[in-house]
Length: 143
Image 1 (cartoon, rainbow, N blue to C red):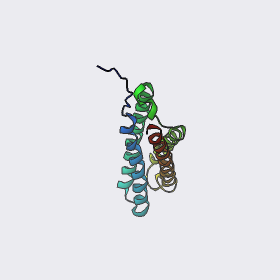
Image 2: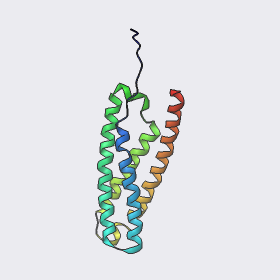
Image 3: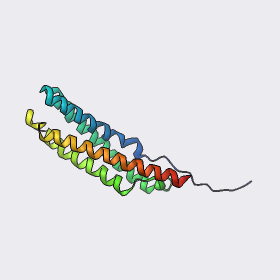
Image 4: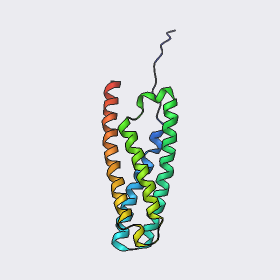
């Protein structure tokens, strides 16, 4: 019987949680735009809840990322510095945006909350570009 050791790459746990804040913060921008156009308080409440859900999902993603760093089978697929920095900037902007959205009425969203949501969305897009580039590089290394 042959004994050959092959390195199997485990599935990174962080990939389960990273999409949650990206989707929630993108929808926050959409609900902020809807609030700006309609002045219906329901959209402000949706934005606040989406920010909360995204921050919880982001916290879980950070914890999963730390676990992935400790697992030998997922070290090769860890994100790069640009991705990690982008994700942390997204979370920091979302915390600030959540504090802005904690206010009442129109001024809780327009203009500062809307600007923070748009800025968060732009950083998300930039982070996704960095992630796609590093994923392509990882696929090239593995082949």
